[in-house]
Length: 292
Image (cartoon, rainbow, N blue to C red; front, side, top):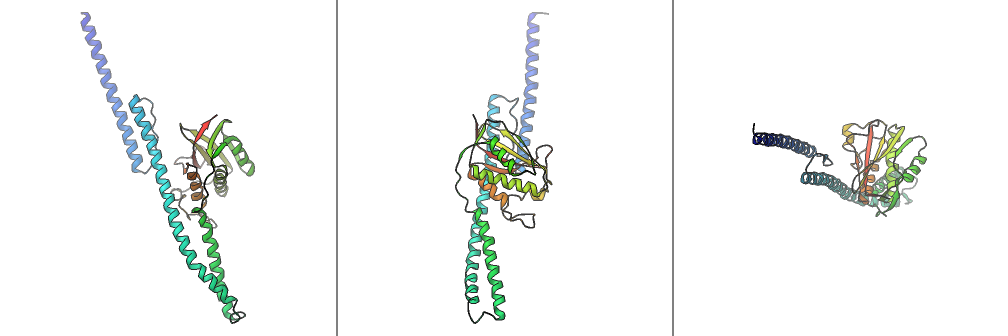
């Protein structure tokens, strides 16, 4: 056989390998497209597909799509919060407008000599006390629409969560955070968010809480997990809806208010679709970060 034959055979083999590689590569790209389409169909905009095995341009495109999905998720959450704020503001305003005159009028009647000591006094007092209780109830929900502006500072996570664990001696905290991790946040708001999540975990019968990090290029996800009773799917879908609660004495503003506090810090609060292994529930606190 001539040397040209070997050259032609080698070129043919290279072409066949390239065709097979290209065919397999295109199949993998199609699978990625199907996964992303399915995530969008299920309103899961927080999808992040790996960039391993992609060409440079494809890797950049996948990274951009991952970031776009995250931004869409944040925008939807922010729009939802703003809608609830507007609705709550309108409802509380209208209720206060209706109950305030009733409270004043009933107070005036109770002070009248013509009513004092008569059977009317008991009924008017009941009306007055009911309106006063309703005003207190409505006023508590104004917190959702009157959140103060965040004061952003550098917060070192290791001592921050060390202080949190000292406040809850009945819970066993597992804090998997390096000493040099610092985030940009309002420390008081972040502490209130953690207090709400811890309180909910205790009420769900939790004995252990786990704090871990998932760092990205421009932000850090703080994973807060507990081993309490798992949420039912129908409850998980509504946890950030204001006034929704499964507790007899719950107000339904703890988690919505916590989410607003995170958004006030250019972050977010979400419920993980799949909790950290060995735990039943995981919340994700997203904040800007840098490492010293």
